Length: 476
Image 1 (cartoon, rainbow, N blue to C red):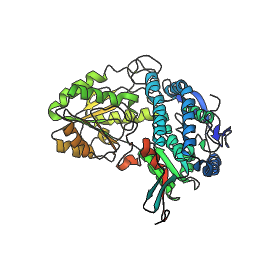
Image 2: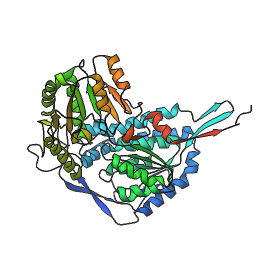
Image 3: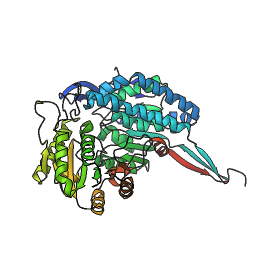
Image 4: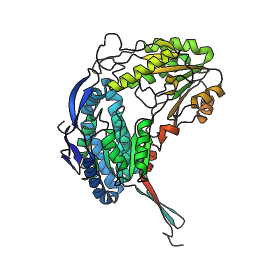
């Protein structure tokens, strides 16, 4: 990498307008291993101007031209696949196997799905004498998180390219290096100048500038609900479209006819994967009251052998969490669970044994959790599972939905019909029945304070389009 101290604007790598920098910390050892430039308002202005200038020509390109560009991007991305996986492991602490098998792979999967989507997508339709046209919305500001970085970058860039939009990307300053490699892939793919622009920076400066900018037609944001509210407020004065995928506190309902051992095992592993840093992690596990103690025993047996360690080590299931801020927040919430009377089944505060530096968190399971406890209400974003007993199907549906979030829900049952009935009552953008395989074609997004709009496949593409009705287009 040679561009850590530069931004990609108008088809070239350029020096920032200011001189602020930020060290990128390796969370496994708490040491700075790279330095990036931090942008200012002037850098955002320059990037937006480039995107606006490029928009008319790119919006007018044919579907075939955009497909060719996206296919070239796929090839350029593949060349850098290992480098992307390696840097993701280093900057955000993902175990090397997870970084290669899942983190980097999400970029490939989403781009492939969007290429397939665009191949079959129709932008115009005649209804009577009226032409219904779907047109690119314009310049899109993109603000992406650190927990699944390439997943969220590609979830925004790929549909924007497919739609004919131009864009300005601000990746997370905590894990920014993968985005620089991605920009290098975009450049190699021959993206027209100004279509894709990258400005690194923090939320209060670059994120705020993008959200407020009158030259930005849409903001697509992924991150915490707290930050999403700030983005929406900043965007309000210019009445731009705001697309958000925010926080979650997903319920995992295990019904009494489910395979308890399998359901608890997979539920625990789902929460602990990526060190609990997934917005749709099933962090509230509801189990029948009569099976509560058995579920706790299973969860303990599953969680305790999970290996915590350096991302580069073999057999590691959990690396560190991404930063000191995240580590301290998780510690406070674990302490709150203990203080408020939840049963600590395994884990707890402090680092795992044998690890005295790095932001490592002990895989933690609480039992006997009640709905009003802090650990059942707040998004912890760490490897912490709450197990809550319940008495009836009606009760558990009501309690599962009793949250300000609505990103995902999970249902485990031996009866597909019964699981479907429960799923139909969940107030969340996704419901997963019996731990299905991931589906790149399923819409992804939330109800309530988990956001608005959807990503993935045609659902994601539609978010970047305006709808125009030309009445009287065809002769009567």
